[in-house]
Image (tube, rainbow, N blue to C red; front, side, top):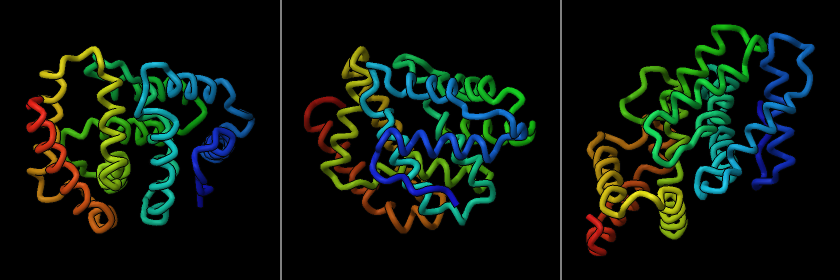
Length: 222
């Protein structure tokens, strides 16, 4: 089983990533993935990031550890989580595809081809535009969206951080897109695809989203 991420200490995250990389590698002579790690952290520390940072990675790892034993290929899900936001261009429309491409470049010949293909598919599932067919992808999407079920104060903090990342986007465009996305989530039979995350976060996520939409409408943003 994976190591539990305690807090968001960078050294703990680094050790976790190095262990995962070595465990998954087909080339046992690969050694420590120092260059891959350096590029990962450089990306997640980009100055325009306020939500999609190492803190988000840490949150995802904590949620992953809760469902580790329920996954078909937990190592693939974990690698997908590490790379799913490595590319974050505020005005980008294909960040997930570029993130998948970055993983493929980093993976090189280190991993089996079918494993690489699986991780790429998992990364692309975080577009959140349709229900994934693969069970692991359903868990990954739920992990990525699990912060929607945070306590209200944290939900607002996260929402403000996302808005700051997209500060170049007008209020009109940002909040219209946000409401469309949130309404699409509310229109699903459930926001979360798996029983585990439904029981843990479904009610609080729905309450948070509904409350947030009312608030931004009251503020004249939608």
